[in-house]
Image: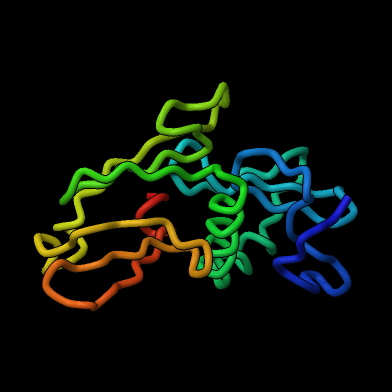
Amino acid sequence: MDFVTVISDFPEGILWGWSSNLEARFHLETSDHKHKVYLEDKGKRCFQPTGTSTLEDFRAFYETVRSVVESRWVHEMIKRGWLQLEVNLPEITLGAYSSGLSLFQNDHAFKKLIDLRNYLPDASTVKSVNLDQRFGALLLEYSSSELKTVLSIENLLWD
């Protein structure tokens, strides 16, 4: 089983990441599988360790690297087909852990309706929106130019 390392040496010698057979819910676990923490609950950021450990030291460290870890998870979601996009400009819907926009039989699947006007002053000129695996982001193309914008998904997906 392959392990994707996202955080190294916290504490020293401990690797945090996820396995190639990972479950469809945002989490980190140690490479020895002794610790696991869930980082989302139906579209809300959380910090829910499994077992009896509270992982308070790790929680404080995680907050300093959260955006990097979330970005890596979004890449994984796109790669695995766990993130779907429906476009009805100026709104989009992101479906997490879904097939099309019908949710899997997964208790942690969720959808987010996003009005691009809340994030972009020129949202009315957007002609297309696509998921971009290279950046783990939304790629927006504008009707008035060749200009393209990359919009980070993690701050749209999780509250």
